[in-house]
Image 1 (cartoon, rainbow, N blue to C red):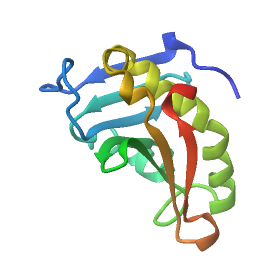
Image 2 (cartoon, helix red, strand yellow):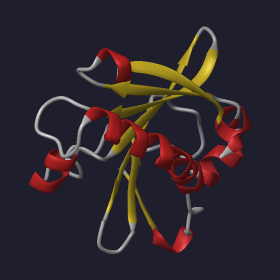
Image 3 (cartoon, rainbow, N blue to C red):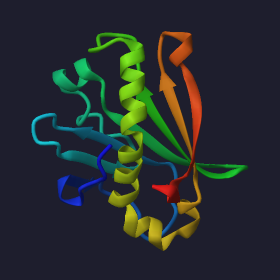
Length: 152
């Protein structure tokens, strides 16, 4: 697993996103280019549906989306990975292992891409990271606790 290359991370912030206050939910949409290795991250109040609506992306379903939420337990980041179901390349076990392998890089990209906002709001860095593996196969359809956001 390689570490994040910040030069390969391209970040877009949606209009209306507050940089001065904790306005939640805050959503992250991450895709990548298999050819260049570039990562494309959009941060906003909503997911970037346009970013994940292309034919190739819908076929591969290898995007990662996440949201920072606040509830009675505090702030948490929920990451959603599509492991199986619909038209996707690869079986559920293979896709599950690929997502698990790349998740540290994905989490690092989320944190690095939004580092200035997170630095301004240190409580966000203490958010618990909950990963939702979404699958039609019960073995791969579950949640995992990946610790605190600051670890990435």
